[in-house]
Amino acid sequence: PHPWHPRPSAPSELDSRYALTEREREVSQLMLGGSSTKEIARRLAISIETVRAHKKHLYAKLGVSSQSELFSLFWQARR
Picture 1 (spheres, helix red, strand yellow):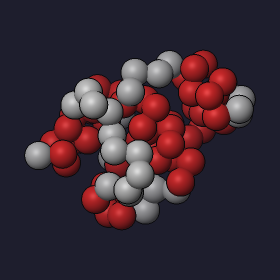
Picture 2 (cartoon, helix red, strand yellow; picture 1 turned 135 degrees about the horizontal axis):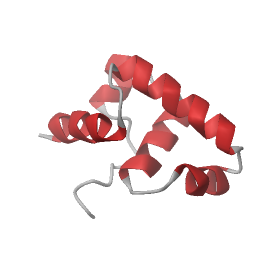
Picture 3 (cartoon, one colour; picture 1 turned 60 degrees about the vertical axis):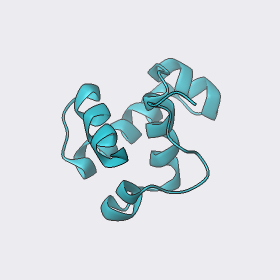
């Protein structure tokens, strides 16, 4: 698998440390896989606004303010 793609089967250390919900974990995995907000909404059968809300919660829980910071955080956790 591509190094940016998270392992979908097992929750990561970040999931446990930051108490991510299952849906937040799904959204983060799709984001890390390169999916756009629109694509995430389509794949999860939820609205674009709901995806934005999940992203907002993810960023707040993880203490990041951009998608690039999210990538960096997950990349560092994989080391």
